[in-house]
Length: 112
Image (tube, rainbow, N blue to C red; front, side, top):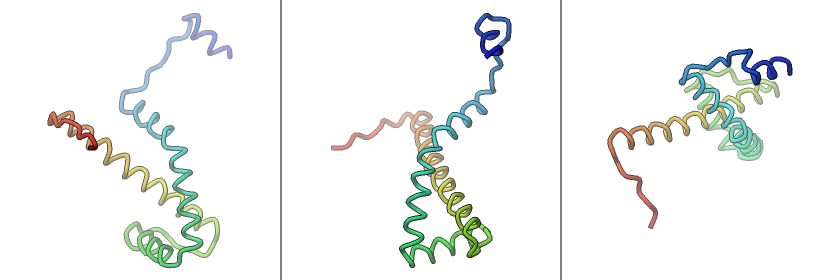
């Protein structure tokens, strides 16, 4: 509180993060809830859908090089990583698409 009061009075200069660091921190904060939602969906499907579990295990092991185990903590960690990965990939695609639209001047399509 003292630090906040000093900043409010102008006695403490407010530090600014570089724009890229600020963008990443805002993006990560914004992704917390979607990641938890995706993680829950993956965990639910992983526990009930055998073919999905086989495909996801294969992807985690062969494509990502993650260690698979029957240990619940390792499984949960892998599923959390898969949820983060999928959300990161989606956001990267969206950001890239928006950047290309701006750069190339492509108008946004509207649904008909």
